[in-house]
Every structure is written in C-alpha cells, then in structure tokens.
Length: 272
Ligand SMILES: [Zn+2]
Image (tube, rainbow, N blue to C red; front, side, top):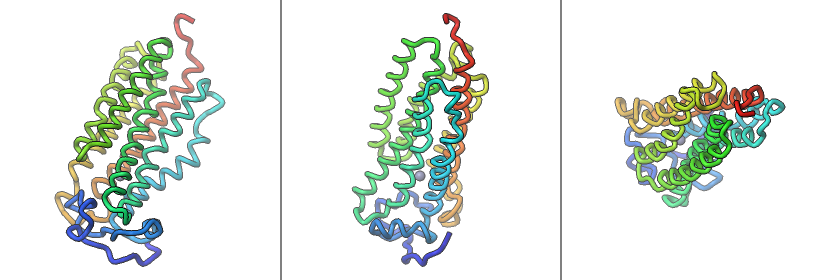
C-alpha cells in the first residue's frame, strides 16, 4: 500500500490535541494537512490507513456488487430494497470521510464535523437498515406497522442527537441502545411467531446485533493495544477490529433482509 513517501509522522504527544483520543496508539500520526495532502495519505503508511481501507474497500465492493445481489425482480416492495441499499453504504461512507480528513488543517471544528458525519452514518444504518425489519415483522398489521415505522424514525432522530452530542465513546455506544432495544422487541415478536419474516432471517439479525455490539465493546475497551501500547499503532488495533466487525454485521443485515424481502412474495396474511 505504500507508494509514496509521506511527510514525517508525529507521535501521540506531538499530534494535535483533538487527535489524541487513543493514548495506546503512540506513533504514526499524520501532521495537519490540506485536503490534497489528506487524499495523498491514501498512498503511504500512517496510523489511520487501516481504518480508511477497512471501510473504503467494502464501500466500493457494496456500491458495485449490492445492486446486482439484491433480487429486484422478486421484491414486491421496491422502496424497502432501495432503503436497504442506502443503509448498507452509509456507515462506510461517513467513516472513510472521517478517517481520511480528520487531520485537516481546519483543526478541531472540522474534526468534530467529520465525527458527527461518522456518527450519522452509523445512525443511518441503524435507522434505514431496520425499517425493512419493522415493516416485514408487522406485514399483516398495516396500521400498527405505520405507527411502528414512525416511532422508530422518531427514536432514531433522538439517537442521532445523542450520538452527535456525546463527549466520549461510551456515551456514543449508549446512544444506540434504545434503537437496539426497539429492534429486540421485533426479534421477540418473530421468535414468538407473532411477527412475520423468513424463518432464516432472525438468525442473521441476531448475529448482526451481537457482532456490532462486540465491535463497539472492543472499540471502547481499546483491546488489544492497551496491553502493548505502540505495538498496534498501524494494524490490528481495536478500531480496525471494530471496522471489520461492522462490515460483518452489515453482511448479516443484508442476508437477513434479502431473505425477508423474497419471503414476502410467498406469504399471505391470514386475513387475506
Ligand atoms: Zn472508524
């Protein structure tokens, strides 16, 4: 990945204060840079390179491959497929922009705007990604379905406010707890046989939330770098592990939603 000679990288103590968020990553900080120099940093090794590519490569793959992987001809509710596609792209898009430009010469204000963008990406997958789950669980209850979709969107608006205004990673992770609990209610409805959905999708959705939670916990616990500060500066630190788990979680969401969207065609509500 190293094609260019980069600038002299900084250690933790000499990096800008707003970039000193992980005291176990000791070296490899890019200096304050222009937009062009941030883009140029795609081609030399520094401590954000792994974060950029662990979401950048999946972003390109999803952008190109997902439209072909969604069985549009078998989907009767097209907007659910579109919403699902946008949901799968959103966290990586916000993340790549955040990690690529976080050392921009605009300083802390630009950094916090980018962090908010990153949080918005996560909120978007939590929100848009769950709408097909809510819709299909309540497929046979149209009125209740509309209320639940609206309630989830309102709740998500509150979650995004909490995530954007959170001052640390623990509060950020906690912002998404209410959305996760809301989804859990729908998973319980499916498990109890009251809610609709493909028999195979619930397993994917439970794996999705478990993997995402694991990623969030690894990120806030700073494992493994807290045990050997400096050893994981460039590769395999907690944030990169979280990125990989987030991609795994999105794949689980994708498989579950596709199963569900195809299932709608074969299902008739009892009252029909
Ligand atoms: Zn990230």
